[in-house]
Image 1 (cartoon, helix red, strand yellow):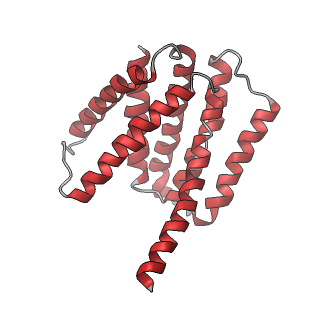
Image 2: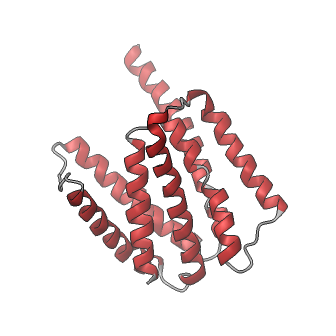
Length: 206
């Protein structure tokens, strides 16, 4: 039941919602909305995971982390009523990610990370394939080598390896601590973008 839950909620709903929403929102707004993950997670964990209760220190740290992301990306955010649906999709993806993480922490620490990850990903892939067909988009394959390379990188480094590490750490870390990945990811991405884009400009611009 846990594997089906993770497959449908994390790899199906969470991935589907965030990738759909990101088509219509800029990266700053997406980062801010997904940075709600620790706040949602501490609420779910307080209710569902014994020993992972909300404390003033934990709540203050979570709020401070969220404020930090707003400070980093707030100047690029443009509120548009037409983007309400995509914004709600990103918030929904944080709820799905939190619900999956909390359930795994409560029921899945005895399962080997690969034994949880592999079938859950297959279930998520099947769910997304069905959703794509129902939406009328069908199943399309990349048409060029660059797109294939990007998809393979996301599949292996961004999904398989990432979640193997995540489920491994979840055995010993609290689910609340791991939820802060959503805070550090955009900050690291911003630094990498600054370094490599600046480098690319210097090389090609000169």
